[in-house]
Length: 324
Image 1 (tube, rainbow, N blue to C red):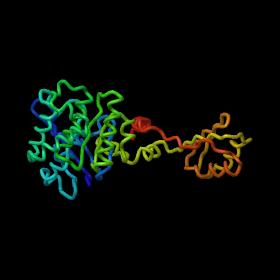
Image 2 (tube, one colour):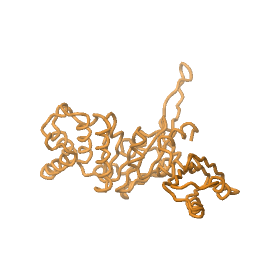
Image 3 (cartoon, rainbow, N blue to C red):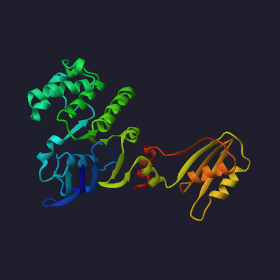
Image 4 (cartoon, rainbow, N blue to C red):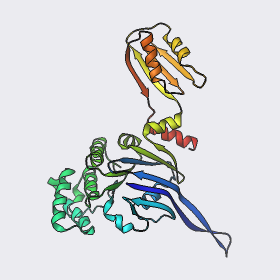
């Protein structure tokens, strides 16, 4: 498990105070960030502008040393022994970074395998397995410059798995890809976590992607984690109300009025909007069991009844408007 506690990164810069005098200024890019990632879990990391997301990822991948805090990966102190976790992590970036166009797919993977010191006999077998996994085996001897965007991104996934890491950091993995290829890559990401047991930290500007993939989400703003939870939990933290859609097979006279009287309480507010045999119910509390019981008592036959959960995108927009 990855467990980072109270990570902080402070940069020192100089600002001019006159012709002959400079003053040191401290800038806190990340403030007391704590994150957990388990094997087999996909964790989303979202940031409102200037959030400190890039700095956080660089600390977790040991490219930057934190100013203070703790970072353990499978009980290894990653701050004191960054080289000890090198073989347990890797990064998959969006776009065309970290792959070489003039090399073939096979040569790219061979190069990275050599960097990790993987023995040749093991490396040959692993490259074959990875190219088959991402559907590029038939194109293994083709130069990357001839690849489509989707093929390049699949090669990125293979490159990120070359050292068989336990944890993968995915930075905008579907950036610039069309809907079909993006969906295909999301399937690969799910498989890596749920079937291969990889722990994944995912960053993306595509909220629907994070909503679909992430088991748990952290939201950063101005270097601090301002919210965390599942997508549904985040929406409840931000919107503070629960909405339902109820549709009946049969018409029940005065049901709207009866529901209002029954559901209202001293610490609860309820709004109910009726249209034909459908009801839009907005409440400050979870009333799903109460609504079902009222329908049963009144002989209403439920056709459809579900909670309307705001999209993750709406939640993040609301957070940015509120300033957390």
